[in-house]
Every structure is written in structure tokens, then in C-alpha cells.
Image 1 (cartoon, one colour):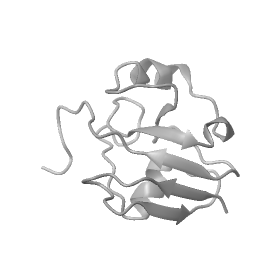
Image 2: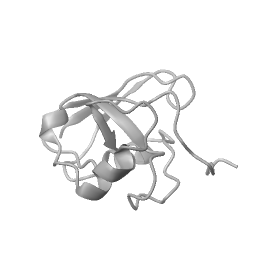
Image 3: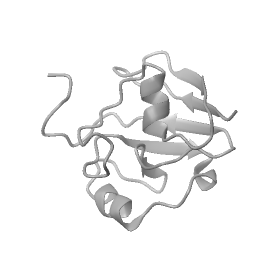
Length: 112
């Protein structure tokens, strides 16, 4: 089972977390299944950027981003070379280190 290390995020995961998950699950579902409430305003349909994350280690073990994902990533706040939409990034066999950005571009929050 691959290990996913979630780096501390002030609001979403202040202590950070270490998750053990089955390969084949999306990063978004892995976090949600472990009570890390990452935003996912489009219900994980690759239609927004609220679940944007940085894959700091293990990036190459993920399946390549689709053209749709790349198009949405271009709109993400703080885009960098390690950016992925967590709803589209499928966990493989390798360990991952994930950083949740400080901000997202979100007009509607699921928390409200």
C-alpha cells in the first residue's frame, strides 16, 4: 500500500497526515476518506480547480494529466510544475508527498 504524506496546511490539515491507501484511488478521494476536507466544488468532475495540490515527491508515479486537467490547471492559483488536480491524480504504487496550496480560486465554497 502506498503511503501519502500530506504536509501541514493551516486550515485543512494543521498537523499534516500520513495515509496508507490502495493504488487506483484519486488523491482527492484518499484525502476525503481520511477526513482531510479538501475542497472539490465540481464534485470531482474535472470542471474547476478547488482540489489543486502540489505533488512534491512521487509526481512521476501518477498517470499523466489529461488535456482537460491541463486546461483547468492553467486557471489554478499558484500553478507550478508539481501541480495536479487531486480529483484526477490517481495513486500508483509509489509513496507521495502532497502540499495543499494556501489558496484556491473558488467562487462557491461547499462549507457554506
